[in-house]
Image (cartoon, rainbow, N blue to C red; front, side):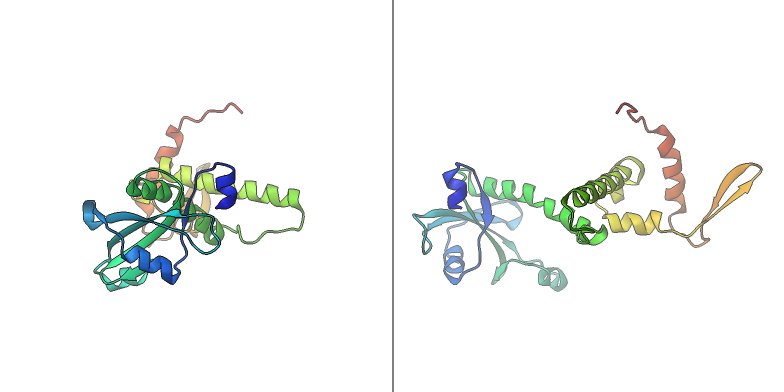
Length: 212
């Protein structure tokens, strides 16, 4: 944070859950927001800091579903789950939270690249080769997501790469030739046949810019 402040850069960083931070977060005066959410702030000078820094606290009701509640990776106290951020932004607490959440969505992309695509399997010890590998991986990722947006039903708009692969790509089939026409035979119990037909109809209608 000192480095960022010296260079006059703005930041929003998740605060570590030290006992002091937890106690201060629980004692904040919260402003009620929509949906049971609440937001507040406090200032604190940790050991070794040159001065006080601003902390934002956002809390929301713990989900009633025990399974969903167990998945929370946040500080939980009584009936609320807490998120604590440290920042030098001068926005309202809720605006700071919205700024953080907007950028935090990239974590979903990183998880997809790590678990649905082989980002974690860097192939060589050569920097240039690894750059090429990474760019190829990003191309594949982007192609799958454009495929979702342009060809798949709307319910797939939030589907992961793994879901698209499972439902539409990693499907056994048999390509035969009948009367000089290629015919693709899918398994009889394949549940997404209607979707595949819609995809086949959507692809020719795409207007792609052929200029490079």
